[in-house]
Amino acid sequence: MTSAYTLEEAREYLELWKKCKKALASGTAKSYRIGTREFTAFDLDEVDRQIDKYATIVGQLSGTIRTKRVQRVVPRDL
Image (cartoon, rainbow, N blue to C red):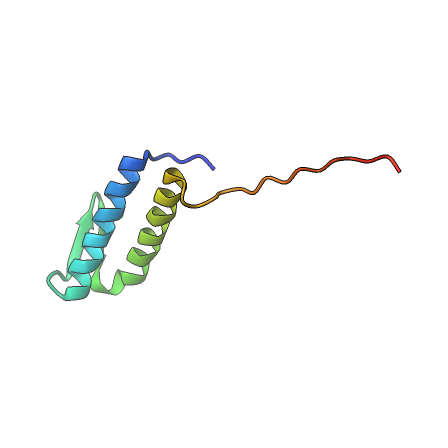
């Protein structure tokens, strides 16, 4: 799988989403804006999905998550 993000970009976005969740969950913010999207305390499920997404991308780009398994087959004539 190729990603549209570099490892540094994915880490940056992951940190942004974690800050968003912390602000919404702690009650210090009723809403949070990232770019053109705005989230309220009721959008915590969406924020969690974004955190999972970027955590997966970071894992794939850093090599800690295997994306595909290679299987070799040797044809035999019986």
